[in-house]
Length: 557
Image (cartoon, rainbow, N blue to C red):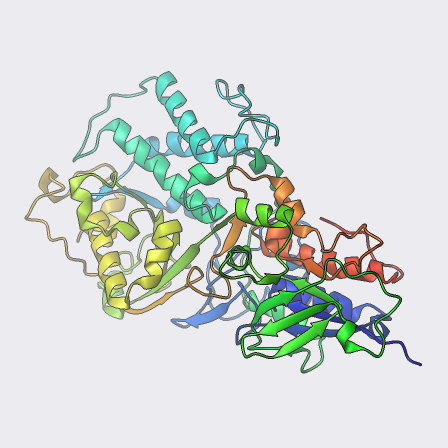
C-alpha cells in the first residue's frame, strides 16, 4: 500500500507563501511526502507586491525597495533572473543618492525656500536621534532613565516621545550661531519644529506607524537591515514573485479562493497515519464560496491586519479560537497603513519654453501647525506628507507617500479631489514663481514680502492628467500595509506570532496543524519582503524537519 501523502495548504500567494511553496516543492523527495496547494483570495499573485505601469513608467504600488544588497535573498534572486536590467524607465531608477538629496529643495509653507544652514542642523539632529534609538550612537543628556538601553525590560518609551525629548534638549542647549530674522509667518522655533515634523512624517512611512507615539522605542534597536545601498528593481518587484512561482506546476496556485474559516483540533491525539481517510485530516478550511478543503498542515501567511480582524468576536476566523498567547500578540502588535500617490503631469505643465524651468523640483514640504489659520488652504490629508517629487529625474510622474489617517482618507477621495488638493498644496509652496527663481532666492519672501498677499495668485499652473493610488487599508485581503512593534508590545510578540499550533513540543496531539509565516512573524526583519521571505523558508523547513527530510537547514527566526 502506498502511504497517503500529507496535504499541505498555504494560504496566500505573496512573498512568504510562495517562498514556502517553492521550498517544499523543490526539495528532493518532497513529492513523495506532500500534496501541495496554494490558495489565494485575490485575482493575482504577489500579495503586497504589486508592480504596475503608469505614464509609460514602471511603478510599485506596494513593496518598493531592496533594503540593503549585502546578503539580501531578494537581491540575489533579482541578480539571478536579471531583473536589475531594464530599458524601460522605473520608479526611483536614480535612487535617493546623497547627491540628489543635496539638490532637494526644502520649502516652507508660504513659498519660502530654506537655506541649508536652517535645515541641516535639525535634519542632523533627527538623524542622530534615530541612530541612537537603533543602538548606533549615544547623545549626552538622553542616555539615562532606560531610554538608551534598547532592551525589552526598559520602561515603556515611544519613538515619538523620545524624538520630542531630543528636540527639547536641543532647544535647551542650542546657542545662536547667527542673527535670526523671521520671515512671513515663521519664527525660528516654529520653523525648526516644522522641519523636525517633516522628518517625523517620513519616518511614519518608513515604519508604518501612523503616530510615532505608538511606536515602541525598545524594539527599535532589534530591527535589522542588510548592509549596502537600497535599490529598486528595474523590471519590477513582481518578477521576484514570478520567479518563485515559476517552478510550481499549473493548478497548484488557486486564485479567487478566499479562506473565511479555519477549523483545527487542539485536542486531536497523534495518529500513526491518516492514510485512506480524508476525514482524519485535522484542519478544515471553508472558503467564501462555501466550498471546503481538508489539510494535514496549513501555513497561514495572511497579513497581521487580516489576523486582527479574524480574532474579533464577530469574526471567528479560527475555530476554536487561537490561544490567548497568540491573540494577545496579534492585538498588541501594530499594523499600519501606508499608501503611495502617483500623479501624471499634463504636458502643458512642463512645457515652459525653458528646459531648466520645465523640471518639476524634488522638494520637501515644511508645513505650519494644523491650527494655524493660513494652513486651511491646504487640505488636512496633505498636511502630514513630507515630499512631492518626480519618481526619477525629469519624469512626468510625481510621487507622494501617506501614512496613518491621511493614508486612509486618501483612499476615499475622488481623482478630482486629489488633483485639486495637490494643486492647492503646490500653490502654497511654489506659488507661480519659476522653480529656478526659487533655487536662487533662499529664504526670500515671495509676493512682495507678504506670503498672504492677495496680489499673489494661489492657483497652480501645474495640471494632472492621471491619478494612481494604492488602497491597502480598505482592501479586505490586507487591511493595511506592514507591521511595527507598538508601545505595549515587544519582539517577544513577533516570536509568538511565529509559533505553530498545536504546541509543537507536545507528543499527545497531532503537531503542526497550523503554521504562521509573513513579515509580522519575523522578530528582526518585520515589515520587509526579505522578512517575509525568511519566514516562508522557516515554516517550509519546519515541515521538512518534522518529516525528517535530510539536508534541511536549521530554522531561522
